[in-house]
Image 1: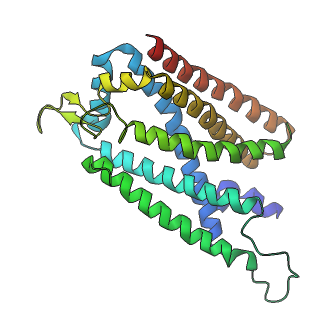
Image 2: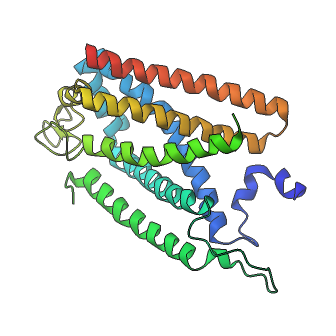
Length: 149
Length: 130
């Protein structure tokens, strides 16, 4: 256990011996860091509203067309996907980490299959995945076309 | 504060962020005061002068000047700042263990979080009152 901890954040990406939950954990952390850093930038970016229409509008155009390249929708889409994943996976974690939608405690017998990761828990994963895809598509369609499905 | 209580607040703010985050998205889409329900409306395909859309200065300011939206943004800022900086604290504490590291990380996150919160509150207040 101590050796595992020594690996630090690199161990988030160790797929050996670990299943889907490990990947969800790693992605939750990565998206959390990304969104958190975006939040800091966003708070300082939006304070430009106090500098008047010229500064604000020019900044908005720059964020949509940074250095003359139309990257804005792609950057927003990556942010949206990160937010949607972190949000719905966080909702799932809130449910299961508080002991809901898990199997009753049972005696661990060989071959020690984790029953807690099946049944309702698996159903919850599938449901959150569907919600992520639906909301993700709605958001990306809106970003690129302005059409709200 | 006990770690279990902080974790409870992390779950609670997470749920509130889903609500306020959804409202934030609606403020820039379905509920924008802009007649064009899209983020950017340019002069033309080749002239990238912003003339409308949800992110146009006048429409963004209209949202800030609405008391209900200003309150939603302030509440959103409060819960999201706590959630984000407590999240950073948890991640960093797991990487750098020990009581000294824990204190340094906790106070650093508290100070940076407060700066972000105060700066955001300043924007919301001045835009609302100005």
